[in-house]
Length: 494
Image 1 (tube, helix red, strand yellow):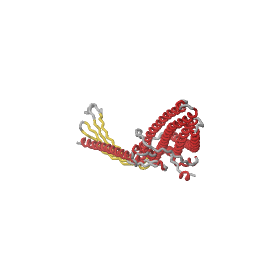
Image 2 (tube, helix red, strand yellow; image 1 turned 60 degrees about the horizontal axis):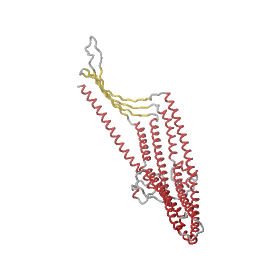
Image 3 (cartoon, one colour; image 1 turned 90 degrees about the vertical axis):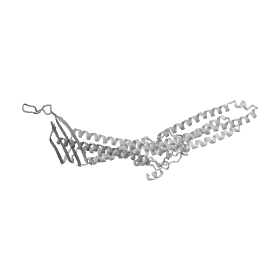
Image 4 (cartoon, helix red, strand yellow; image 1 turned 180 degrees about the horizontal axis):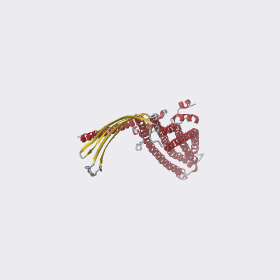
């Protein structure tokens, strides 16, 4: 009967342990489902921390871009935030990092330990005066449950919580960095797609111009043939008409190339927004020529408060400093309260004996095993890691300053180029008009008309390209400082 009671106690311990495992699994599953719901909520709530009217994000929009009459930049940015995997990766990494805070806080919670065991033992006590058989076995069974509660650890756990929070803050800056880079990529490809459409439009105008000039050439031949008594067919064979037909054929080739540029750019843009299989859609056909006067000093001031990489580097330095302190904190004493209950016994030849149950309650002040050599080397490692983060932060600051300068110089250069390209286009159009009139009046040959028709086309392309580069340089300048710059930012940072 005693052995049955003992087995019953162990059975209860095993059942309790199994229930605890099942409960733990249920809690983990519940937390995982909660985390998935939180991820979905965070994805919906993701928005760009910019204040430009062309980049405002409304994450509640779900319209398909193919059904839109015209897709705006804001819609593309919204789709990129919802679908680009880079943002999702950074978000999931941040959520995973956030759990470390809970793990650190969990060190304050009570710790539970369950244990049970079974052993068979053969005791060899055979002698001349003993009736114990050497081939008999004794069965030993036991079980124990223990609880421990941390009372005080001289700030070691609170430091771990602070380190976990710093790590989580760093991961949020990584999300901001991905968003900042993504916004630049979308804007740059969007502006270039507009440029390719303008390029195709200019090429179509060139083709129409060349075709219209055939009538001008024929009219010129009629006047010329009346003076020289030559037939128009003979004069057409002199070269102007064949040359013009060659120009038209070459323009058709340029049209094919411009259409190819449009399709390739659209594919790249779709890939960036995370919808690589999207159907073609309509976008604006205009590039802004708005100019913003700002100094590199003002850009640096804005970057100091907005650029996520700079914030990340500073947070990493703070984390490294805390890691250095944690090396000492990890060897400080811990004060714990503990309690336990255990029971067990043995059987021999179907007889049970030594069944027992015991309780323990107490407090303990203890330190982990301390190895002075390892502690010393960990301190050295922490110091070098801190120095590394400081040097890394300085490198990021230098690279950011260089990026700001490059973007600022490019932006100012494109402002000047736009004015020059606009003047060049205007002059070329005037000269072409003059040569067309002279050719119609028989005062000049067609060579100048054809030459300046091509010059006007090149001037148009150069002007459109300058507009694209201006908008792209503005996007690069915004990326360098970590936000879209407005006139209010310039006034604030004067």
